[in-house]
Length: 165
Image (tube, rainbow, N blue to C red; front, side, top):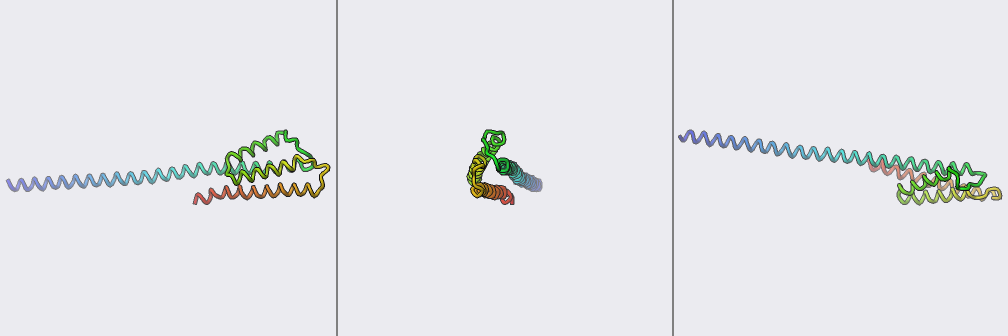
């Protein structure tokens, strides 16, 4: 009977040992699964965030280019004439300006405002009696504002590239 008890005790210990090993194996597997899931979710969230930010940057870039191009086009169109500010070209210009005011940070907003004001000054002025030097001075102000806006827009777009790395 003692031999049977000894065998039973060893069998019970073997069963308990096996159960503990299975339990620990399951625990390790579960913890590994959780860690892998968290890592995968974190990667997906990061990928989604970058994709969203890329869309926003692309939108801003398109708006900046459109605003700058329209600024230069209006100046060229009204190089020797005055603008009544009621045409479709000017209304579209105001629309893109307002879009930039809504989607951009303050540095860009201020630069866009300065550019709008300088373009307005140039296109509405009566150029027929204006001295050449005065007209050139106003035009240089527009060009300066365009250059400033271009640089600030470039920096804004570059922020995304540095954020990615």
